[in-house]
Image (cartoon, rainbow over all chains, first blue to last red; front, top):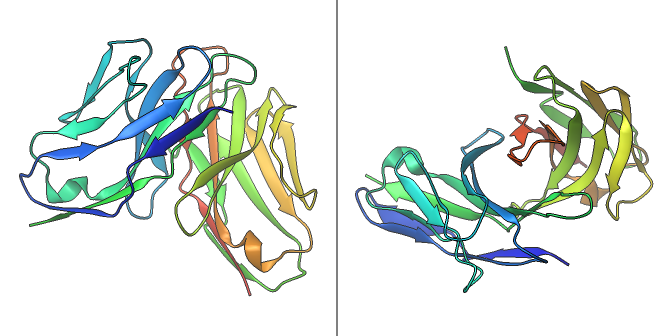
Length: 113
Length: 114
């Protein structure tokens, strides 16, 4: 079945460091891809998305590019802030059937001042 | 106004009890979901309803029974609670027919079974 694999956390960085969180997927066809973020004590919220190959999603300084050759959607940010501390989830939306959203296991990110 | 609201936020109960979690969305969406997040943050879909019709039913024990009285509400009832049911349960909603694929999540209901 369809699946999403993220790099294992936790990830701890200093403020202003460069961030990469890896995400690869296995799916039938070309699903839509998403990054969701979960801040402490809150539900998930959409961070960015890409719906077709080579699309780049971006929001709040975060970026991710849909790479069909490597079936990847890595999340990057050039300079992280303490407020970026959260759990990040990569996800795909199936293009057939129930079109459900399949999540990766989440990566906990902690940014130290 | 909260877009997707769940009650209660916290629930502590004994094994064997029956409990319910309620969810309401005021976004006008036609599809609602229940997700379970375990202690390691894994997020798994349990159920999905579209216009009160069950469309996704993952491999979930039949002790879990969702009910959707209308498209703005999706409740989750759990019978004979077990220790392994301890988790955070998230309700979410979306437009099924749209292409955005974006889900809007509630804040979660943390269930602790003792």
